[in-house]
Length: 380
Image 1 (cartoon, rainbow, N blue to C red):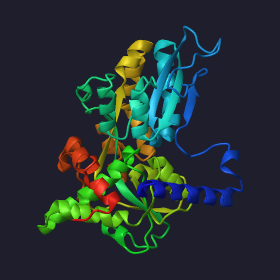
Image 2 (image 1 turned 90 degrees about the horizontal axis):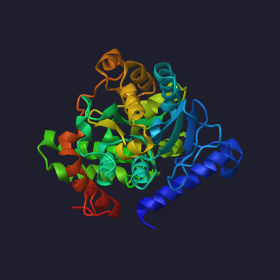
Image 3 (image 1 turned 30 degrees about the horizontal axis):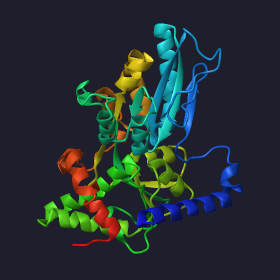
Image 4 (image 1 turned 180 degrees about the vertical axis):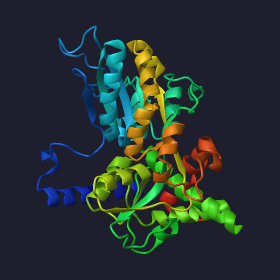
């Protein structure tokens, strides 16, 4: 068992123990769970579910007809809560325009896992991921054209965010920036970049901050960035499958600091959870894509409604709901409305300033990349 797998296992065991102590039941007795991999239904009538193989199971008699249309959505786990608000709004809008009821089939998974599921046969009409690299998996599978980002003025994106730090109430370890995560005794959580697109954003934020710090000091950027990432990783006690699973572990009391999306912390704080939000001076801008999965939509005859749904997600009404859920909107009018709620850190940078996704994947996540050297403890 390698180091990251053992950490994920220890984090899972700690999560289960704490949950049992808090709620007095075994995991098997739970009626609902924050763990990932669920396939859910939000329906204007009644929804069939995808089978485990990704094949669509036919609805029972009377569940659909000429006045209904089924839309299959495959999304990364963090989108689940806000989708429960957006989907009924879109269904009402579509019904008013066309007279059709909408039956939604939904699947929520860690972004990388979801992309592999769709590429492997989960026939989603629309896919929402945490990073554009996961859309590339669909391009490689022949499901989406290579020029998908040129279809609209948003470059294929639907929301934004930034990587932040979440601490316990009062910020007892006085966490202000990435270097504070290297302090002795500080227990850190972030998800596993093997399975989670959100985790790759987290790692990119730390590594990119190290590059910028070195640039300001006139030092070797790659050496300093790797050194910072390795020092932070030594304090990581758990790497879960997805950003949502990592957040669940933090909620159950695991760790002192979580590296996560801004929207994840904001949504918890809005719900009354006593966390502190720390926006590092140097952090990365997150861009989240949405795409019509052309081949599946064409096979299902749902291209029109799939594109209408993607367009609806960028309209002010949906963008406001996304902003309320903690996401940074892409629609200019809503971005202007919410500017005060989403301050921009002085050293905010984008993936393009790290050389773009292709360069980052080769530098950090290839078999000889920095991330695997960090896991193996290989220093300069």
